[in-house]
Image 1 (cartoon, rainbow, N blue to C red):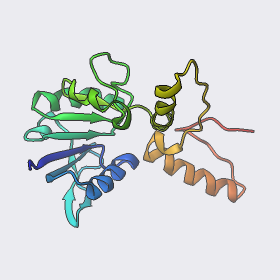
Image 2: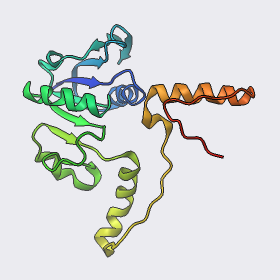
Image 3: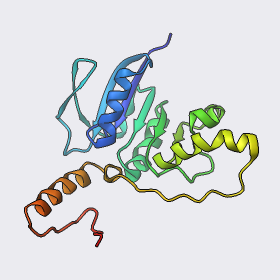
Length: 192
């Protein structure tokens, strides 16, 4: 069985660290893992299957020899680096919104349209987390009875805005509990 050289782009963020955990538990045969992030996060040491792995600053050459890229570093980072990874022979699974609306990039939910995985040009997008859950539930209903319309309201997690938003939420929560004013910057909307 082929073993894969895997890179995780955005490895130090909330989703990236979860990707590392999921990859550790998966049955994907991993030969090596490369953890990529911004210059600010380069040098951090994370664990993968009990081994220390130093986070590297992402450059186009980071993808030399990589077979599979799991990307969660934000849309602009995906747009900048995933084409570079594809040029170097990698298949990229993008967890950002960067490629979701591009016709030539398959938008895949494996439980629903796995066959779309086989028609890619190096980049595979996945939908928003709320969409994935909804479509997995609705697909059997659609197949059996059809659907004309679905109306959905969702409440999105702060984690979707990244680690800095989670940190801000923690700070704001402490400020509110202490009766102090808050000054949100990352998610500046407040409810009444």
